[in-house]
Image 1 (cartoon, rainbow, N blue to C red):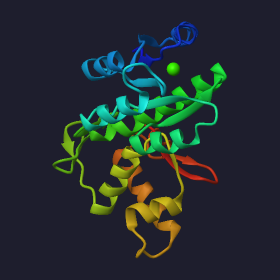
Image 2: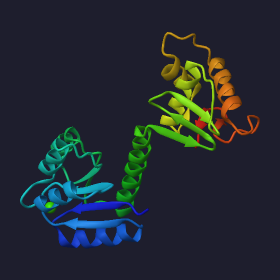
Image 3: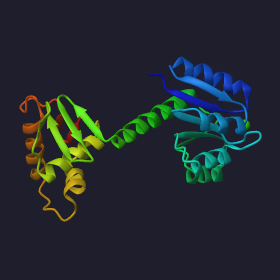
Image 4: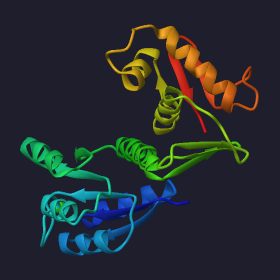
Length: 228
Ligand code: CA
């Protein structure tokens, strides 16, 4: 799936350069040359990311972003600001911009920021769904039910909470300390071995072959990572 970017920028030369560059990277790019047109498009269509100039005709980038956020539109945004506009940066972050780039900027830098934001956006959006599946395992979060090939799997509360935390943070390396803090809480006995035991239990119950985990991976020296 091609990700869609809305570029709101009034410098036509920059619009052309950015459009070429982003399209070349496989993004679908729509453009608006003033703030009002940008606001309308951002509200009416689905975009994965907004690239907003601050100084725009009709409606500036800050007002545009604030209006969108007030309408509950949470599309991630990168703002483009002129050199030295430090106040702008603070204001924009308050309004819910995800990142900033000062003009003139390096195209590689912009691409790196865009990738980082889109990656973040996708990984935080996923847990909102009410069910999650990997392999033949299916988890129904509202019911707190786990099935394997359609058959119920009995998980203790702690195992279920650990599983849920893994899923919410999938693809991330999680240290034993982090897992203890997040799943067991600060009042827990600070025994990192506890984590190993519970990961072992999840593997026993949920992995096709617990001796060769496919989903609950050990990251040597760092902790664990769930991939699914
Ligand atoms: Ca401008």
